Length: 135
Image 1 (cartoon, helix red, strand yellow):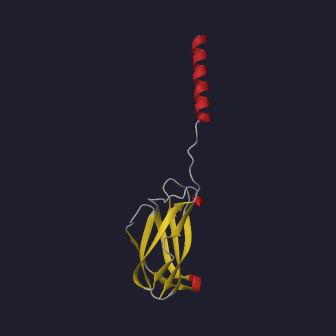
Image 2 (cartoon, rainbow, N blue to C red):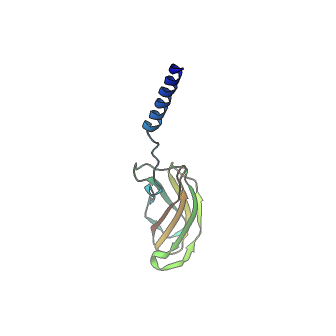
Image 3 (tube, one colour):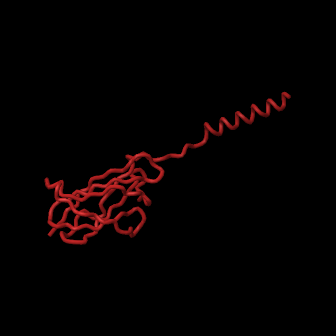
C-alpha cells in the first residue's frame, strides 16, 4: 500500500508542478489593437476607397479576421456631424486590411468611426480616424 500511496503522491506532485510551471497563453489586451489609415487623404468625389489596417501594437502585425460591427463616416472634425455618408464594405486586398467605399461629397476632414471584435479577445476595438478629402 505504501508504494501505491507514494506513487500517487508523486504523480499528483508532478501534475501540480506542470500546471504551475506551464507557460500561460499570452493573450493581448483589447487596448493592444488599433486601426490605422493606409492613406490619410483621398480625392473628393464618388466611389472613393478607404483602406485601414488593424494592428496589434505590441507585435506590429496586422490582424486578419476581425468582425467590424459598426462603421460611420461624417464630417465631425469640421463641426458637421450631421454630414454623414454611406460606407460600403469592400473585399480586402491583403490580410489585416479592411476597405470601404464612400462618397466624399465635399473637401474637408471626415471622421471614420469603427467598432470591431477581434477573434479570441474580450471587448471591442473602437477607433476614430480622420480622413482628409482634397479637391
